[in-house]
Length: 156
Image (cartoon, rainbow, N blue to C red):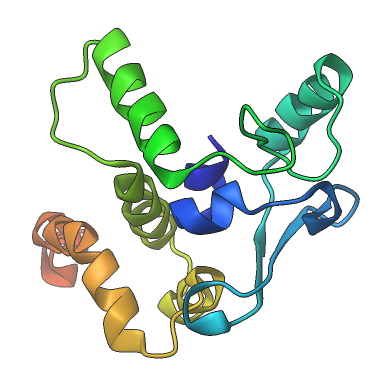
């Protein structure tokens, strides 16, 4: 949920610590993301509700998502397995990976009218061209746009 809601890479997700989460400001701080860059992303109200439940049920110390050895975080491979298992359990046949959630985050923001430069910043891309690759699916919707000529009311 957090990967989709905030557009996180799986490596960023597993390395989250409780201090990376600012519930009051609805922000996630990502330190040393890809290219060793720091950035912030948005934190959804739904994720905040889940985190509050999560904090109640689990004693969180070092890592937000600890592994079997609580001094280490979950591995990328484990998260990928959990995602694939969840797809199967939900009877979703689509060929998807946990990284698909990051693509969906960007695509859905664009479809909701968010400027691509803001999406670029949330994803932590240096180049706008990289962000444009993530949102290629949204481009298909441009074919559904009606010409302004067709939307002008007829005068008679």
